[in-house]
Amino acid sequence: VTSDIVQAQVKKLRDYISDNFYTCTNEILKALGKMYSGGGSITENIDNAGGKGTAEFVTKAIDIFCN
Image (cartoon, rainbow, N blue to C red; front, side, top):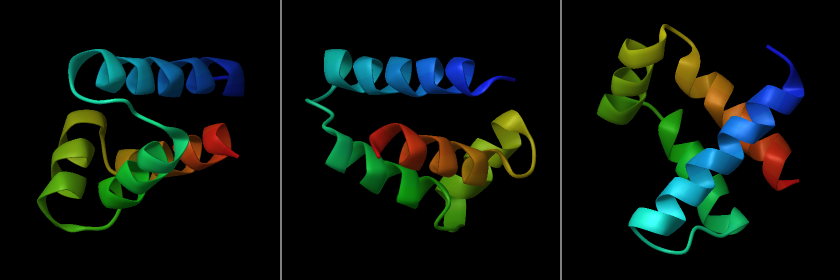
């Protein structure tokens, strides 16, 4: 998976959140990313959906996208 594809997916996530819930600024997106890999049920759910390590991968992708 290339970084361009990953970054496009992060942008789609941000746009989805903005279109369906609230304006998702980069600051909010980074906070969500930290939550995703912060442990507990949210991390477990993401890893269950995408495989072990997915939450951490998404967190890193969001961090790169926002910086």
